[in-house]
Length: 364
Image (cartoon, rainbow, N blue to C red; front, side):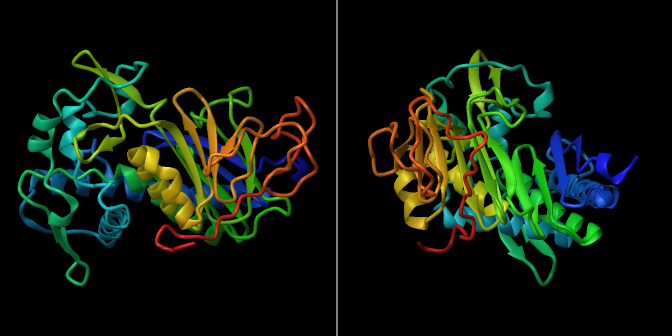
């Protein structure tokens, strides 16, 4: 195979989801993939809720006791607690029992798919009493390599672990191959090293598995990360009710948010994912919160209407977070391109770079 025909990307499955790896130099795809696979294997062994031999399963089986843990697990747990602190508890790693009670007690591929909005939280008080101890009850001793949860608490680090895995694995790949890389883990995107001159193209949709015909927008990033959280895809039926995986810590039930999908660009994929999850939980208050942080965001409501925040490029029909009218023919996009023509798609041939330098804990 000649250099001209060497692939610059690889696709496979890991962590129960799809993995997409792209490299700036096709000649080093193999070592980059090997580095990613090694990193993801280690993370799966540390954090999987569905492996009896994982550190997370051991932690949940011995809640209330002080336990030793690997540096990898401690790092992941500290990130989850940082997410909870930054979001006032809207992203809470102690909702593992609530997820089980909602039926998410096995690999998502084994769940019975369903559609529609989740049922009203009729059992909210019961679930809350049974499952919530709160993130502040988790104690971490980094120097001792140990942690402790409250009795009865079950951890679930899924709200931060997948994006964190993308960040770590992209860094490992870049070290191994010596060039710029983009890595997608279930639609959460991390980059490391120099990007192509035009940036990395990313198609933003409800479902990262969708093809280019699905509704969405194509944007370009040069660094940092981009994450998408959605209640439109990972849904299942449990006890005759429609469920999804983003829980409201106040009720222990799937959140009933204005937003079905939120995408955010930030300095890292982990920070972007903290923001997307919290935005769905916060609902109506989310645009102002993201705007105050200066985080570019694309928010899609239950009817498919798009709202953009901060420097996220506008698209036809979108409104800004401050409630401007929909973008019409002759309007100028956020990145100062030529005016749109009537009926012209915003994405596709034209490029829309997204700002990416902020962390969730940095004010605008």
